Image 1 (cartoon, helix red, strand yellow):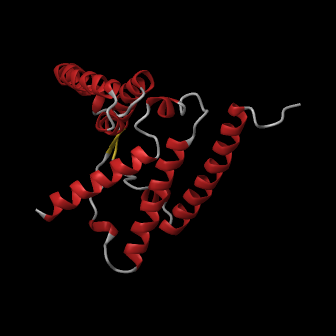
Image 2 (spheres, rainbow, N blue to C red):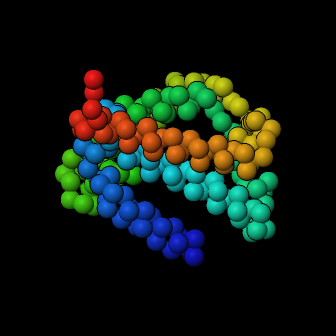
Length: 187
């Protein structure tokens, strides 16, 4: 029961933060596809880096054992198909599944229409699944469950590289945002 309550509290908290960041607005979200608004990239990359460093800290403090965490195998076919379908839906509708809920709870009618389309697409996918199941199991990659295993290196080096990449994304994204708003001088 505690897991359900904590999950609901974290979900509501995450939704609140998404709304406060403007992610309930499809115009802000589609800005990432036009490279004019890097907020989504920045937030998601920050979440990934924060989680990775948090897991590493919890491991070194003895609170968790990384080898006891379940890491599912990667299926490259499923990732490619799912990424393409979600990406197309995101680019057309301006929402992903989570942000559509945030938009709907914020009173956006278009988010409700998007959710209906999402549910319809889910039903269509489930009906088509027997035909495309072989594609979803292509490219199983169980050897390198994590970057540490794949690259045969320490979590410290992976996290340092991710922090450097995050800084680079913040700098490059900020430059692109300024460039698209016309505040960068050009010769």
